Image 1 (tube, protein in one colour):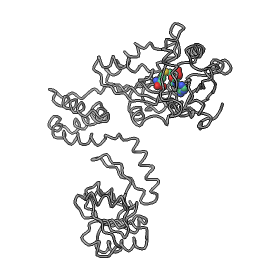
Image 2 (image 1 turned 120 degrees about the vertical axis):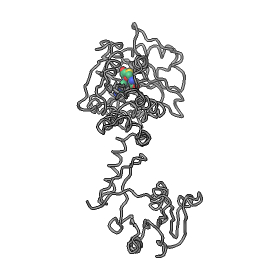
Image 3 (image 1 turned 90 degrees about the vertical axis):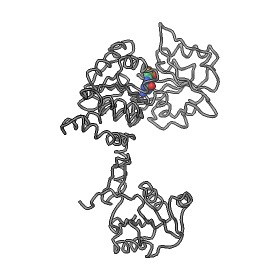
Image 4 (image 1 turned 45 degrees about the vertical axis):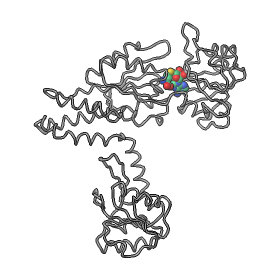
Length: 463
Ligand code: SAH
């Protein structure tokens, strides 16, 4: 081990930063987070540091460094752009056994500063021993995505209840099991989702029960998997995908995304192909309830966003009636994924002040839409499930006053590596599926904004 990792307590400790630029500012900010008493010395001091001084968070001295400056300091950071000076400061500090960090020369000082993932009171520090700060930063970014922003709250909650848990469970093994389940169950999830009071109530309920039952842990995550590109998943979606015991997914969820679910999770395909639902909606709803009642963490993975033409509302209705804890994770909906990847802004100051998300799904062979609302000027229409009714869509829009030449696009398998964009007009929309083999899923976007595609398209430029 080249460097010995420790965490320093610096509350009210006098610390010196030599340097008045951006690096010095960053180091000062870090020291302030630890409540250190910071003095900054440099002949020229930048505006950010001056602002700290104005707010009485630090003391600044505008002049060059002098050897006596380090006296009475507990920790010094040499952050000037003069490496000879930095090394000199290091020698002075070392001779007085004062902790010293030299920003551009990790070997010159007595300590180095790690990349930090701050989930106070939980702190993770990453260091490559000075070999590559970039590598440390990348690693930090990966860890940031894995650890929920509210992770620290969990640690605080544990410390508040440690004694109570100790008195409830006499054996270490029982206690450990209790905490392990708690940290991976609904209490933790409630905290991550910002429902602190509910988390507290649930924990208290578990602890005040006659014989504190260890929570079975059944819960449901209704998660939006986005339009197809796995990179468009949210951090929370990915985390829940990796902790679920069982996943219910349908055809709309790209296989690249299903593959990110925990490897040993049970996978249940519930279909939803047009006109041949593998499992009727009521059975899906019931299955979610049954699986959660067995104590499983159930992931209901939906394409796009669960609350946009996703029947998310119906699926959680029964959960709520059965008092099963659930949470909903939004996803990028097809309209916004397809629009971005096709270079079509859904709104634009010059072309569209509103955007409607509508379904072109046929019911009894017709499309039951409020046509006059759809043909308003300066408005974009994002049509889900519209390819089968494309003739009716085109005909009715024109009949109700939309100009025949209004630009229109069909985006097939948007955001995936095989995305295709077809550009036409409202009048000629029906020709596209006639002349091409349009594969599902595809999205229709209508409005003047479509004309911007020519200039703004950037992804999978096959036409
Ligand atoms: N909840 C989903 C929509 C479900 S309805 C969401 O928020 O995106 C299904 C329709 O969404 C499809 O018929 C298609 O019109 C559209 N769709 C979903 N993913 C798509 C994709 N990758 N490319 C184009 N259209 C898509």
